[in-house]
Structures are given as C-alpha cells and as structure tokens.
Amino acid sequence: MEIELQPLDRSELPIIADVVSTQDRDFMYLWAGSTYTYPLTIDQMEQHYSKGIRSIDAGILLYKIVDCETQRMIGSVQLGRIDSIRKEAVVGRFLIHSEQDRGLGIGTKVLQALVRIGFEKLDLERILLNVYHINVRAIRCYEKVGFRKTYTKRKLYQALNGEYWNGMEMTLEKQAWMAVD
Image 1 (tube, one colour):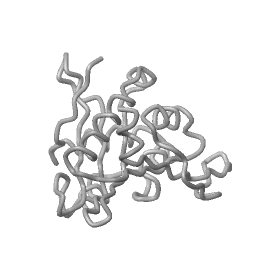
Image 2: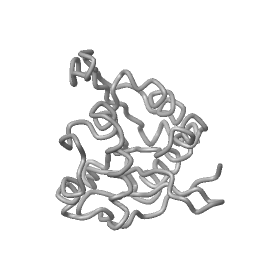
Image 3: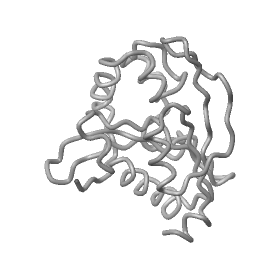
C-alpha cells in the first residue's frame, strides 16, 4: 500500500477520538501516554491542541495518513515539541486505525516520510519518540527507520492487568539517518 502524509484538519479530530475511544485505557496510553484521561473526548483533544495542529509556532504538525489508492484516512501521526533552537522534535500520537492495516509496513513508510519532513524541511538535527517496552511491533518499526534506544524509565504506567510498563525514549540523529538513507 502506498501512503501519503497530508495535513490533518481539526474537523478530523473526531475520527481519531472514535478510534481510540473504542479501545481500553491501555490502548490510549500506548498511543498518547498520560496526555489524556480515559475515555478520550473531543474536548480533551481540542484543549491539547488549543495552540494549533499545523504550526511551527505551536510546535505541532499533525498529519493524517492516507491510502493513496483509495484516499482513505487510515491513521494519524504528529511531529510535536518542535524546538528550532535545539533543532529537535518528538514523534507522537502515531496511530494506524485498523488492525487489518497494521503489520503491513505502513508504519515504517509513515515514519520514514515524517523523518524526511523533520530533517529536510524543518532542518532538525534530532528526532525523538517515546514508546512503552511492551509495544514490540512499534519498537521494531522505529528501529527499521534507524531510531535507537537512549534511555528507559522504569514503571512508568500500570496496565489494567497490574503489569508495569517501562517507558523508553528512542532517538534518531540526522547524521545517522543521512548515512543510511
């Protein structure tokens, strides 16, 4: 499947909220960490994105992931906490909506496109992301693109089953990306 990143419109936030709201609290934490309180509401999203969803000034570029053939929105991702002084940003809110679209390499294509935007258009030197250790499929995707684990924070979240999840930060430096790309 060929994908493209297109700017997300505020009117499409309910689509994301609907996908996340059909899941449990653990799913929401995998997707957004502690940003929101379960269950996710449009009001929470509007408040979180009150400064904008597509603005360097707001520090966020929120994209929808579109299947090029059908023009169907199949997910969303953001490049946030954009810091032009430190020349870094953080990948977040990465979501492929349907389980049938997961595990097909779409995430790798999305991340490659987002990293290209960060390094080539925004002239960043470093892109970071955070992931829970139990999200093995996502970690493999991030490693394929070149992200490396930089540190782990123990017992960051307690899942519904009582298990503690460790949070990991992963980093991709522009020089390393250019050497592989």
